[in-house]
Amino acid sequence: MASYKPVVIPAVPKLGEKITQDTLYWRGYKVGRAPGPGQRWSPSVSAGLQLPSPAPAVHVVGFLSDKYRIFSGGDDYSSSLWDIPSATEIVSYSEHSDYVRCGCASKLNGDVFVTGSYDHTVKVFDARTKSSVMTIEHGHPVESVLLFPSGGLLVSAGGRYVKVWDVLKGGQLLVSLKNHHKTVTCLCLNSSGQRLLSGSLDRHVKIYSTTSYKVVHSFNYATSILSLALSPEDETIIVGMTNGVLNVKHRKPEESKEKPQKKRQPAYRTYVKGRNYMPKQVRRSEQIKPGRCILRKYDKLLKSFQSSKALDAVLEPHIRLYTPEVTVAVMQELNRRGTLRSALAGRDEKQISLLLTFVTRRVIEPRFTPVLITVADMITDIYQPVVGQSALVDKQFLRLQEAIGREIDYQEELLEVLGMMDALFATLTEKRATYLEENKSNGLTKTYLETKE
Image: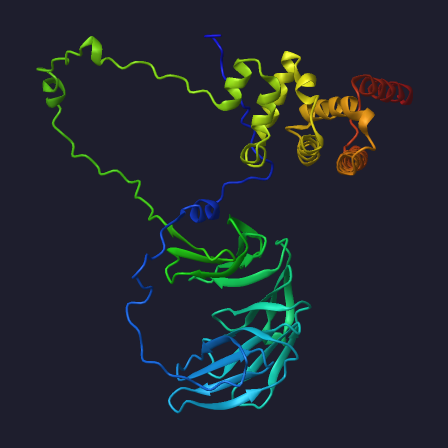
């Protein structure tokens, strides 16, 4: 057993994973520490000013660009405009039919602000008029709105959708993004306006390019996201989550890779350098010893021939979800030893469901398909007599059958497309005469000329 070698995990890259400039940039954000007790985010506190609002709950406030007026919106379905110096209400708009939960102001025009409501609409207001100047139908309860610095584009978030509207064309829809799996709760722009960030209840923050509106990077968090903010210089990203945690990530400054140029030394120093060098005498006790090979849990179990426990070790959540190649590699090693069937046998309902869920999810990946097809065949042969006794296991078997059926249909469609492409390329290719045909044509031409003469 002293010559045992750990299981070799094949390093196969995931399909579609590309390293871009955005990936390297956004990966530089690392989790930092939030302020401790007694510390404040703001260095100073201003004097208080209380404005009487009729709303039972005010959910959105913001400054207009002139910094002397503010707008508000709340649960009374209304949006109000307030004057700070006189602490009075200038105008009130009651055009929404549900709660007003978000809003923003234009940075170019000091009279324009936008509100979003749970009545599925986004309204654009002008303080110089007594009603809204534009109404946009989002289609879902609006959770967040955002105006681009130029004021020509408006972004709304609600449901699973992030939609971009052209305000200058009367609220024309430009693009509808559906990259989240749950409700989108917050939006944010970076300092240059070239990246749009969206946070959702699916625990992800998506980063889009504002030129192509494609996802260039994504952050994954522990729980659902409710709020999102970027520092003015894009050095810090802050996310507020449903568990009460405020996650702060800082981007490390890029280190300069340019090495300082050394001054050129005279040529004679090349011969003089090292003339008096004496090697250091190293004691035998100080010699570096080779490091010990630390085996992982599944390697230790495989070394002691505990096949079933080794399979259980690689089916733990942190391994099967984040490094599925390790789980598949151990299954392949057990199959090579001939102990995979015994490791799969004798499991209860929960363990069988866990195995079938993993196989169903990963069997369609080309790098795992050969091994997991063998695993699926063994599971079917072993637990076929107990089919019908557990509704959970039967449901997993049906999902596995549907996944394999869909993959077979995809492969058949791909083969049909390849056949069409081959036929199309064959018709476009120029037909060249063979050597015999060329000789035959030359001979006929020569005979015709001799007869004519």
